[in-house]
Every structure is written in C-alpha cells, then in structure tokens.
Image (cartoon, rainbow, N blue to C red):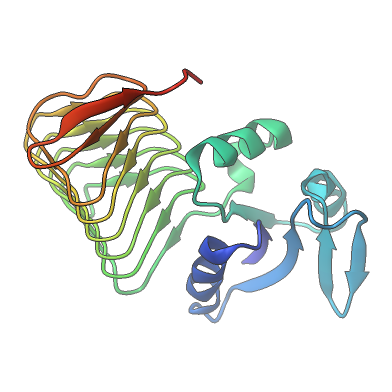
Amino acid sequence: MKIVLIGQGGHSKVIKDIILSYKENKVIGYLDDKYKDYHYENDQFSGPISSAQNIISRIDNVKFIIGIGDNKIRKSIFEQLDLSSDYYATLIHKSAIVSPSATIESGTVIMARAVINANSLIGKQSIINTGAIVEHDNEISDFVHISPNATLTGSVTINEGAHIGAGASVIPLVSIGEWSVIGAGAAVIDDIPANCVATGVPAKLKITLQRM
C-alpha cells in the first residue's frame, strides 16, 4: 500500500513505524503546512496539506493517514481535504488484538498492544493508543482519541471528538459527551456531558469547554 502521511510531529512517528512494519507498505510522501511548496525528490513527495489532490492526480491507489493526535486538528484537516473515505488507510499494529466481530472505520489507527473486543465499533479517524482496552459492545464515534493504557469497559459510548486520558477507566454503560476530555488516571462512573473536562477518582466536572 502506498501511503502519504499527513503531519510530521511525534504522533506521526509512531504511525510511520506501524506503516513500515508491513513489508507491502511504503510511505511515499509527507504533507505538513511547514512546507510552503510542493516537491518530488528521491521518490518522495512533500508539500503543504493542500497538495493532497496533486498527489491523487499523479499516483494510482494512494492512501492517506492523518498522523495528528489532536482531535480538533484531525477533524479540521479531514474537512479541509474533503476526500472520500476510500482514500484513507486504516492501520492496525501487529501486536493489537481485534475481535473479528469488531468494526473499525477508515482512517483509524490501532496502536501496539491495544485490545478491541467483541461487537465494538470504532468510528472514522480515531486513535486507539498503545495498550488501550476497548471491551465488548463499546461504541466509539469519529475523531476520538483513547490514550495509552485507558480502559473502556462494556457497553461504553464515546461521542465525537472526546479524548480519554492515559490510564483513565470508564465503567460499563457510561456515556462520554462529544468533545469532552477525561483526565489521565480518572475513573468515570457517571455520564459526562458534552464539551467538559472531568478529572479525578471518581471523575468530577472541572470546566466547560468552548463548543466546536
């Protein structure tokens, strides 16, 4: 698979390792707005994010992955590019465990040692980070980030754009509202409304965020 990686920060380095762990994959380019112009040199493309259409016109069967951990930025780039879901790769690390009954939508990345159990749904352009556990019957929407070693127990709902911090846990049947942030190490035992920050054990609301 020929893949263009969008973004060149720390998160994209981890994604690049996943891409290259499969011998059939090749990173053919990097798009980042730190580049002012579009270039092709030594079999590699580079340029601003707006160069995606140029690459599509030149390369057959190319795939893109947005290698940016920030959910709002990832959604903004996705909307800016306005590409069909068919143009996005879905990446799963070889050490991840994914149930055959789970569904993972386009553009999502499943990192090393993550676990996705039975009948869970992972929406598009989401991140299940290193060692995270998504138990059975979870429903995770688009542009979500589940941080390293977080645990979502059974039948949890994570709405669009929410961020679950490293080592946080969410008990069964709880819902996290869209674009809310759960702090690292938090234990969520009640529903969290949209556009909020919740921290602590048990998790308590701290602040309300500006709506998207």
